[in-house]
Image (cartoon, rainbow, N blue to C red; front, side):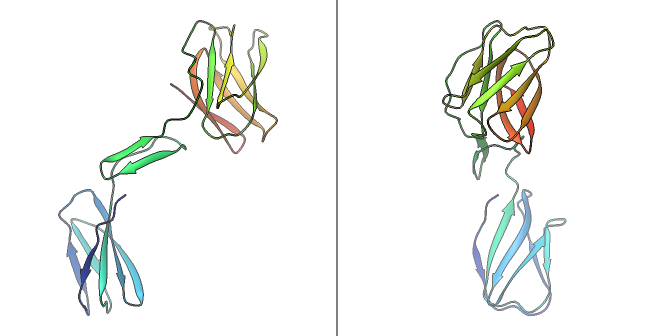
Length: 171
């Protein structure tokens, strides 16, 4: 989202602002004594009432984000912030969990075949070795708010505890 500021003189009655940028979705006016907003429909934002000495801001869609995380955005888009972690690299039987939310210091991975291990979270990273590659394993948050993530297999995963549900995405 970005704001383009301008200033308008005293205005009375209905007002229309034509917006030529197709990415602008809303116009906001900060006027003497009031702030008003209007959606841009068909390239036009419509306002009613007496408006005086207004600064104009335009809200624009600049991109999309795909999950709860930390992002940096500017006028050209958004990018996910890098999370400090121990880069382990993928290997057969290795599960690397990178926590994006500092939600625990201990994780447990358990699999239907009987594999069960706990691993400390160091530099936002927990590593499990010897994990069966042929089955979906459960990831459990320990020493924290309860959380469970499913369908973890060997590889690198970015995870967070979202109100008791482990949300993980494969890197």
